[in-house]
Length: 320
Image 1: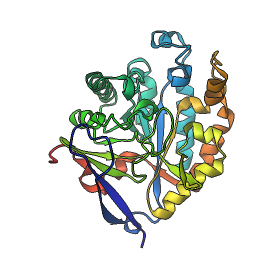
Image 2 (image 1 turned 180 degrees about the vertical axis):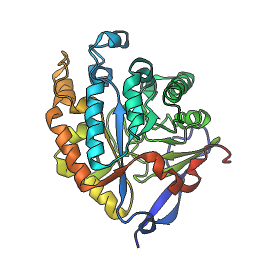
Image 3 (image 1 turned 180 degrees about the horizontal axis):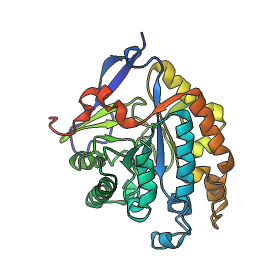
Image 4 (image 1 turned 90 degrees about the horizontal axis):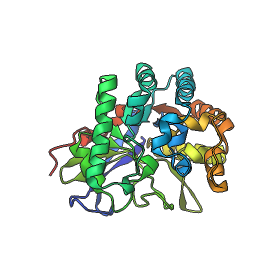
């Protein structure tokens, strides 16, 4: 019998900043899946909207840049269709406004649409009120376009970090049912090292929020990121595979992510620092083959389909 723990975060004060009060319940995973189904997620944004390129392309210049997101999304949709996989696509509200055909194509292919904020602004750069406006406008734009509820959110650059837990309160109040922003690692710029690695429930004063953290593994007992994205392009594929294999052995679903621009070696090369050139452009040509290899080895699905298995996480209001 495969048993896993579902962790529950009890963090009632509105400014609690540590994962210090944890309880758990046990779920028989063998009764749910003969094999573990992980989460395939895509952070949908244009290549010029990322942090590595923000020094050379300002938001005021976005509409003047050549758009390439549609061709990459078409390639990802075809790839997922070949493998019979439905995933979760965290989409910018800006794209709903300016690239609506791309968002509709994702939804019409049967994938889940979730929110990636409106203009790809990091939570750490926003006040609580500005964050509320961002997640509200994104949810509203996406729901109006696809005619379906948007349940999930992922912060740009995984920027819900210790000290910014008020973001969970805002998400609950704005009607979100889950978040997938926490990276249980210690890293400059982002990371929430004390977060559990398994899907869990965050309890706040105004309700509950399911959390789906990004996949990690350990090297010499030190947690390292292994969820995809730049790590898929920079690390050996074996490191990424190991993270999902370990999660499968624990009977816990793990979360993979990729950006459309990461499978686009033909995108324009912009004049950024050597560090950001390596960070953004290295490994683009090989990324789609690595994604195919992971889809061959592991079972993947979308996050929303797992919410009922977290029990009360489906409700966002009414918790003490």
